[in-house]
Length: 270
Image (tube, rainbow, N blue to C red):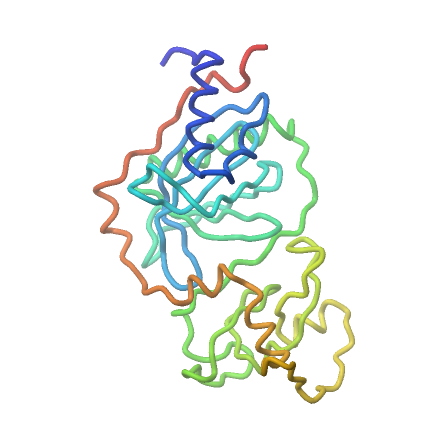
């Protein structure tokens, strides 16, 4: 493949940005190069989902697929220097998988073939190496969330989950826990430096915060309790909780393969 011209590269970057609507404007950065793109299966809390991934020379971008790839939503952008990849063997439910770890969120992804998996990993590592020049920073990474279907009981007290005793996730350890075992909230700086996040009792104590006595639940004028307010903090979690699990094998035949735009064209000429 011949080296892409500056204009060809910029047209490609703009096309990706435009596919995300107004949110995509933040992708239009000087010196940014689209290196590769393709679709991967991402393990979410409730199910596995096909996501569109875009590798640039400085960031990894992914989002939900709308209208068969013509449009995307829920843009997520992670600097390559904040990413740690861990290669994994095939699992029962996920083939050609690996782990993408970041300070805010860590998750499993899988490719349509082993060759695509190796291409993604090698190209991400190559671009990251150019950004960091071999000097990785010391970072705290988020733990992966245990999928909902992995346990029928709370992983702290062993109480069975029911229609009223719902599943939740501790944001520090990623365990599936019930409401009574995760009433505490704490700031986890590498995930969000301002929000109080749901944590289980052991993680709350491990963060060095004294465990206070439980106080009587307060109710506001609208009839909502403190616990009700805390339930609403994560839109992404609630959206995924309501979805039925899907079988990603249905998508494989219609997937376009991972496209490596140009291995030589890392920075546009100025």
